Image (spheres, rainbow, N blue to C red):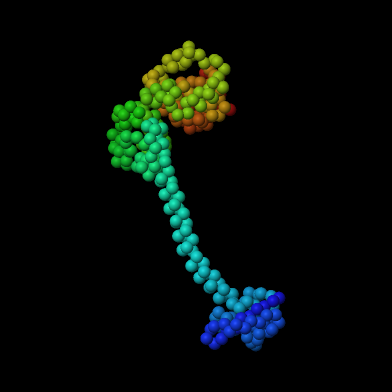
Length: 297
């Protein structure tokens, strides 16, 4: 092992002399080793050889305790620098995101994200930049107290009974009233309606005719909740949902009200029966048995 030692004068300046090889090794041993104890150049204390990390035959010049204190001090000095760099990168990302241009699908105008209207509850950007109103906590509290709500489509204030349930909403109701929602669905304007229609076309066997649809939509009582249904409140429901592999056939469709259809969502009938109240579940079992289906097996 090659060891190099630089000597210093009494004033602390190097004197320019260096020793290497055996001469340097002997000089280091003579300066640090006394009575079997090694001198730490940091704390100036003589300690056992086990108190020093080994570097070949000669222990390191600093003991383990001094090295640990030096490492802690160096880490403390580096930590604020790393935190400042992380904050700077985060601020740059946020600035770039706020300056991102978003295009409104309704009016076609492009605006930076910072100028886009946001929801007062979740602070998420709205779908359209030309949205007329952003509901606040006070608006939601007023709607809950009055049990009324303004439809986002027609702009009319109606009772909660005119809106379908929505568990993800703060007031528990859809943004669009039932008549507007039904008109959008039947006109093909509703999001995802084209994709759903393509799935229906792929899984249809031609058994659902206009005469069958007129007969099914002529019922006035919902078979699930036993409530009265108006024409705008009737929805064609797939007994086994299309998402779970159900087909668009005469044996797999029925008519439910908006509330029951929204509550069922995409659950399988065997699971949905356990989610219903006992009396509603019994009515659905009777209906399923009447068309030759049994989901209690």
